[in-house]
Every structure is written in structure tokens, then in C-alpha cells.
Picture 1 (cartoon, rainbow, N blue to C red):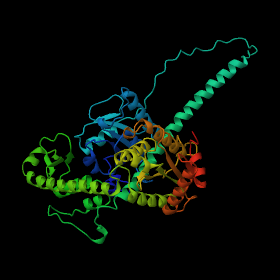
Picture 2 (cartoon, rainbow, N blue to C red; picture 1 turned 90 degrees about the vertical axis):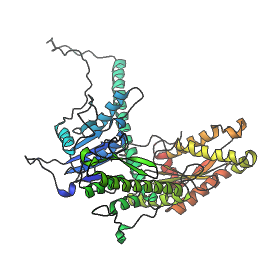
Picture 3 (tube, rainbow, N blue to C red; picture 1 turned 180 degrees about the vertical axis):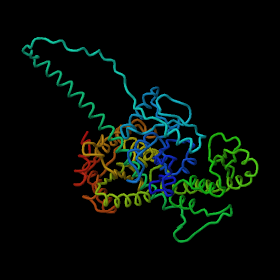
Picture 4 (cartoon, rainbow, N blue to C red; picture 1 turned 90 degrees about the horizontal axis):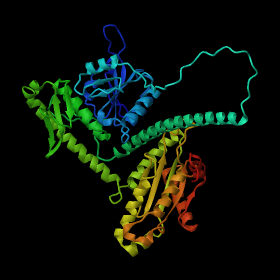
Length: 519
């Protein structure tokens, strides 16, 4: 069953599956990348199933159970395509990933999907049944990596007459103490980096939830609570789960495959996008999305061929509609020229973020800015040059901000960046690597130093931006007042000579003290 944050719990409503000895078989199973095991594991009793796109997300999911009722035992199943890589140091990057999982849960089972690999606790094949997968997980032994350090053999001390201890010179004592302090500082820095990475991931996931809420507002999703139902005529049940997923902006594939399994009575069906010899193609208007594959090829090519073909056509229609809805949502909320979010998205996301920040007692900061003398550049070099400035401004800005921050174009050359961390730093000792004010001023310098081809060499060093930083709740209690204050501060920057970023009273406390201060 789906949860609010998109995780799936398989079989929980049926209680716990137990083997003959009465052992508790409940597990949290985290799938990393495209493993091909989603469908079979969803039907295993007592499994809490979570899907992630990459190894970084998997670490965050392992450290953040759905609730107190989540199973204590956890396994992470990794598709080879989702393994972390590091430019020639794949083994080292993979080892760091597994070590990070062990830091969160020392007993986690880390299983590879595909071929065997010595760094994993076990291996399963993508075509395995749910029972086979769970058997591998149960039998695997979580063995932390151990770095072998060759040391000199320890010899027993020889008994000597008691002598007066020899005092080391002060310089030697200071050197030893300094080395110890340096090692402790390095260890603390690594620990802080790990905590910060987890905190960043947690913040990005929370921002994505807000983003999905905003995006789901467009597309005319069906209100199922109102009683709307669609009967496809393909068997028992309705399309309710698929409609709900689309209305909420979630992928429809899982819900659709669940319905197909229920209607056909088959638990050995899967959807594949790679090579699908023997599968039934999922096609709509000439667009091939993938195929439905059944492990029982004799049934699929015999008595089941007609029903699978009907369901493949049904699934293709839903996936094509989902693609259209996604394009509509994106077009409704993005600026066509720059690719930044538009004013409609800005207003909705800001309101949702402030509502959440108010309940969680968090801060939120806006950077409002425009390009100094933009009209003059447009008049002198033409609108093509003006468009280039706008596009490059967004590109440069996105290169310095954090993953969860939002860049919005709300007017001709007017932009707003929403800086928001829903979860905040993981603990008081873990702070962002650079302050909001530091990010803003770094962006200023990049704009000033950037060469815009259509402006010629003379423009380098002359293009500047002026802006204002305002923070919720001190500078404004809602989105409208916060934007007004940031706009007013930007005007103050222009009056101060341009190429200036002015902070409100609230932003002074937030933007300089959130980790980086001035550069």
C-alpha cells in the first residue's frame, strides 16, 4: 500500500508471515535502481518495500524508517546500474557506500542483483521469485569491511629495574599532542561531512514532496473521494489506483501492474524496458514504453496471449496519458525561455513551504534580484543578446545553489531564489558548507566575470545584479510580504550604487550564521 512519501509496504495488512519454526520474517527491503524485483517482493508477506533511484537515496532511506512500526531488520538490494562509481576508483566508491550503510545499521544485509561481487553479502538474480530473494537475504551474513593494517608484533616487556622516568623534551611532547589533535580534527570533520550528507539528502527529499504537491495541482486529477469510478471492462476492479496515482503526480506503473496482476490472477508478471523477447509490447500511438513479461512463457503465448495483449494496450494508454500530463504540468510551471520555474510555481511553492516552515518552526529565505541596466543591453545588442543573458543567468545561478533550492523567473529580468531546508542541519554541530549570503555573492561574482558571446568582450566585468535577501518569519510572515520586503531591499541595493545585495534584519541573522558567513 502506498504511503504519503511514496514508499510501499508489501503485505503488512495481512500480518507477519512466519515459517515453520514461528520465526518473524518481517524485513525492510530497499531496492536501489532498476532491480526487476519490485513485483515479486510486493507480494511477500511482512515486507516493507522501498524503492530508491541511487545509492545516496538508499543511505537516507535506511536512516529514516517510515515509522516506529517499521521492521528492525533491513536489507539493501543494489542493481549494478545503480552502483556508485568514482572515475576509475569504482571499488573504493562502492566500499564507501557499503561502509556508509553499515554506519547507519551495522547488521544491514547488502545484496547485489545480478552477478556475484566479493564486496556484497550475497547475490540474487533479477528473475528470482520473492521466496528465493528472501531466502538469500535470510541466509546472508552482514560482514563489515575490515582494512588490514600490518603492525609489528607486540613483544612482552622485559622486566627492568625501576628507574626514574626520562622526561621528553617539551618540543617532542608538543609535536605528539599536535599530531593527536590533527587526527581527532580529521576524524571529526569526516563525521560532520557524513552527517551533513545525510541532512542534505533528507532536505532534498522533503523539498521534493512539496514540489510534487505543487505539480499535482495541475492536470485535473479525478477526485476519487467524490465517488468517481472508471470501469475498464478488463476484469474485476476499477482503475481507481491508477487514477489516484496520476492525480497525485505519482508514477502510474506500479499501480497499473498491481491491477493487471489482480485481474489476471498472475503473480509472475513484470514490466521491462530493456530487451523483451517473448514479452507483449506496451505501445501507444507508435511510442514503445516497454513490455509485459510473464515467467510462464507457455501460458503467455497460449491461453494468456489475448488477455495480456488487452492489458498491454490498456497500460500503454495510461502511460501515454501520464507522459502528456507530465508535459502539461511542466509547461504550466516553467519559464519557456530559461527553464526556470515561473511565477505561478513560485507563488504556490512559496506558500506551501511557508506553511510547512510555520508548523516546523523553520526559517526560509528569499533572494530577489534583477539585472542592472538590462534594458540598455537589450536596446544596444538586441533581444537575442538579452535572451542569452537571461538563460546564462539561470545556468550560473543553478551551478552555485543547493539541490533543493528553487530558481524562479517572475518577470522580465526579475528572479527569485527560494532557499529552504525543511529538516535543517541534522544536529547543532552540523552546518551547511556555505551560507546563503556566500552563495548569493559567489553568484554575483560569476555574473560579473562571465563572457556573454553576443555582448562582445567589452561586456565582461560590466554585467551586474542587485538584490535583496529577506527571511521568514522575521522579515515577512507570508509569501506576499516576504517578496515585497525582498523587492524593497533590492531597490535599496540599486540606490547604493548597484552590484549590491542588501539583507533584511531577519536575513542578517540567518544568512550570515547558517554556516559560511562572508567569503
